[in-house]
Length: 102
Image (tube, rainbow, N blue to C red; front, side, top):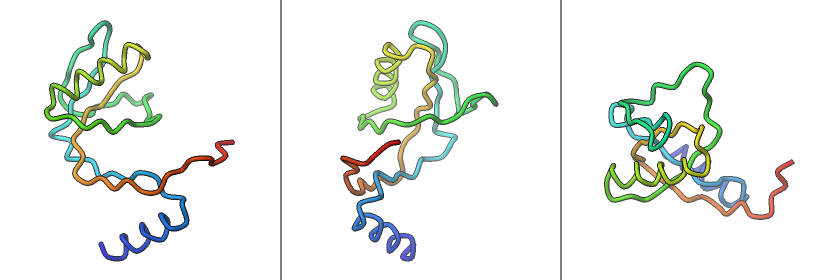
């Protein structure tokens, strides 16, 4: 762990490490998918064609609030599938403003 933290700290100093998070166990995950408000199912059981395109970190007091936030996000992107999982560790990293995304 000490070696990982040294690398983490160096990457922050070099301003190339954004947020880093360790996800909680899959047994505590749920997935929101389907039409309308969607359906909540146990686990992060992605279909083979699905892939991680990005993620949101939302600070919620309980699972129900996280599901409500995911439903709000779905209103803007109704075909998306949202895996909702607790975060076991979160380190904010360095701001990545002004980086060329090309």
